[in-house]
Amino acid sequence: MSKLAKVLHTAKARTTGGRENGVSRSSDGRLDIRLSSPGSPRIGTNPEQLLAAAWSACFESAIARAAHKRKITLPPGLAIDAEVDLSLDDDSYFLRARLNISLPGVERAAAQALVNEAHEICPYSKATRGNINVAINLV
Image 1: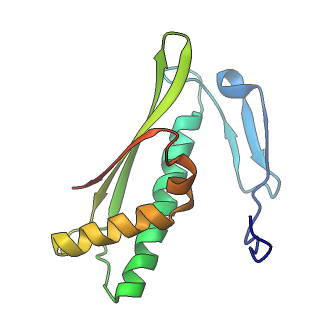
Image 2 (image 1 turned 30 degrees about the vertical axis):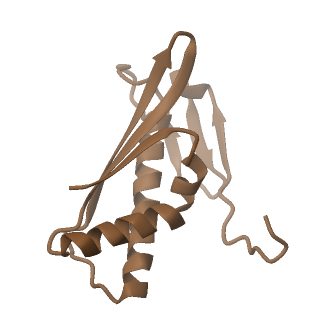
Image 3 (image 1 turned 60 degrees about the vertical axis):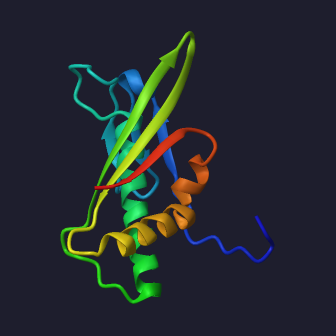
């Protein structure tokens, strides 16, 4: 991080019990969730669902930023369906992801330009770039 970088927000959460039977709580109390493994009958979410929700929310904000710079009005039907796979190869776990983006009413070339720019500026896209297989699809 450069000396000029300004920290805008620091999220703090404490997790106990892991994905099997865990609980995660944010320091401000606004997040308080139970965790469970995918397919488990236990009530709770899993880390992959949390990543999908966080990444798609951040990516939508990145699209809005790109649209503002280009003076493009975003449609009310803008939606991102994020899919995060937890996979196993031999004894190694890894993630794959797909972001399926719908920009109804935006001309396809303009929509693709917004999606491409958003993928460059979104912090989650930056964090995962080169680390996991990611497909960004304009649908």
